[in-house]
Image (cartoon, rainbow, N blue to C red; front, side, top):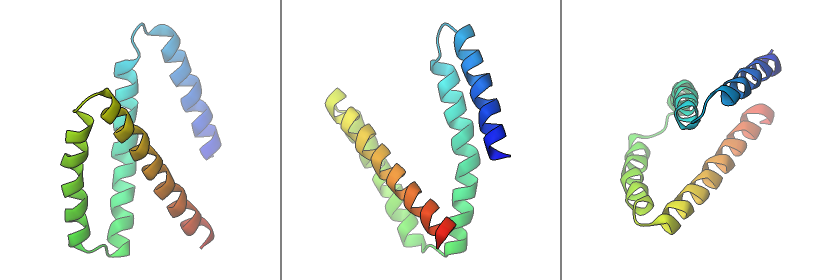
Length: 102
């Protein structure tokens, strides 16, 4: 069933891309909806894990720092984007493997 949903999404997404002159708003909308839905699932996993509130404060403190770094110039913005994406991907793969096979 997940593969059917993924196929339907891909068909609809690529169909919309061919009809739009500017795809920025579409990409932001899809990223927002995807992040919103998965954010609730991520929050539920953190509640199950019993994450201490001190760790949440650390994440909240890092966010403004990354935002400031990304606004300096294009080189910093690209570095924050690339390394941040790698970090999120690595953590996601680790959690997926540990939950699926552990």
